[in-house]
Amino acid sequence: MQPRQKTSREIDMLKTSAPGKLFLFGEYGVIRGGWCVVAAVDRRVVASRSEAASGYELEGADFDNPLALPEAVVGEAVPAEFAARAPKDVGVANLAADVRAVYDVETGQKLGLGSSAASAVALSAAFLLEDGEGAPAKIAFKEREAIFDHAFRAHRTLQKGRGSCADIAASTFGHVIGYRLLRPSSGLADLSGEKGRSAARFEATSRNAEAEVLSGLKIPEGLRVEPIWLGSPATSTSFVRACEVAYRRDPVAMIEVLAETSRIAEKAILALQVGDLPSVLACVERGDRAYDRLGALTGAPIITDAHRMLRKLAGAHGIFVKPSGAGGGDFSLAFAPVSADWAAFFRSLPASLRHLPLALGVPGVERH
Image (cartoon, rainbow, N blue to C red; front, top):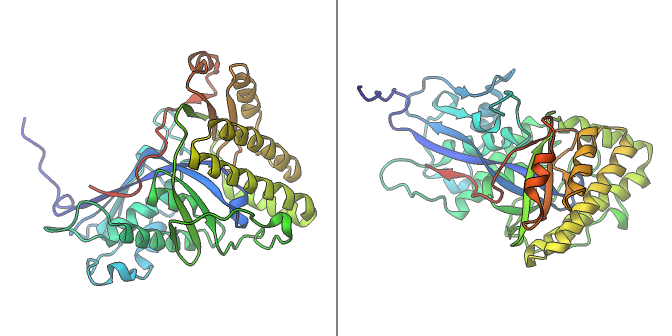
C-alpha cells in the first residue's frame, strides 16, 4: 500500500491546539466582575496555517457563518509581541480548524466545553506564531499573554462584549486558573454596594486591560472530579439575559445571589491554593444551593430535573454535584474523595446521565 501523499495544504503547515474548558466555580458572578475558577480539559481544537491559501476549512461542525471567527481573528491588530516576526500576508484562506473533539461522537451534539473560545485561541496562535527553521517548540509566556489578548479581543467582538472570556483564558493558559474581568460590560456590570464588591485580593499572574488571570491552582490530592453530561446543550447568553431581566425586577436579591457565587469562588481559590479538600467540597455544596436560588429568581431552568436526579443519586454515595457553566442541562460536575464508591455511583446513572471521562488541568495552547 502506497503511503498517502501530503496535500498542498499540509506542506509547510503550522499546527496548534487549544483545550476546551469546564467551569468549577463562580460562573455567574464572573460576568459582573467577580472571580471564577476554570479548568482546561483534554478535548482540544486543532488549528493550522498553511502557505497555500486554498480557502478556510472547518472540520467537524456546521456553523451558520463558519467564517465569522477566523475573520475576527485575522481582523485584529497583530500584538506588539509578534509585530516584528508574525508571518506576512496570512489571511482566512490560509487557516483551518478541526473541532471534532469538542462534539459528542455518539450524538453529534456540541459539548459545553467552550468550542468557540478554544477555536479562537488555536486560530490566533496559528495566525501569529512564526514557523520554519529556528522557531521554538514551546510558546513563551509573553507570547502566550499576547495570544490571550488577541483571542480575547476577537472573541469579544463576536460576542458583542457580553461574554466573560474566561474560556479564552483557560484555553490559553491551561491547567486550573482563577479569572476575573476588570471592566465587565454586561447588563449586570453596574452592581454596586458592599455586597456586590469582591473582598478577595489575589496576586494575578497575568493581566491585560480587560481581565486578570491567577495561575497555579491545583485540584487537591485525593479529590476526584468527574463530568456528567446531562444531554441538553445550553446557550449561556439566554441565561445571562434572564439574569439581566431579573436584576431589573429585583436588584437587591440578584446582587446578593451573584455576590454569593463570587464569594464561593474566592473561598474555592483559597482552598485550591493550599490543597484543602474539605473546603473545596463545602464550596461545591454552597455553589449548588446558589444555583437553586438563582434559578428561582430568574425563572430560568438553570437547575434542571436531570441535575436534581443526579444530585439525589450522587448524595446516596457521599458525592457532591453542581452545574458547570450556565447550567441548563449540559454538564454537571461530581466531586468526592477518591475513596468514595465511584463505581456504584456510575452504575446508578440512567442512560440519560452519561459520565464523560475528561482530564482536568491540562496544558493550554500548544504548537505541534
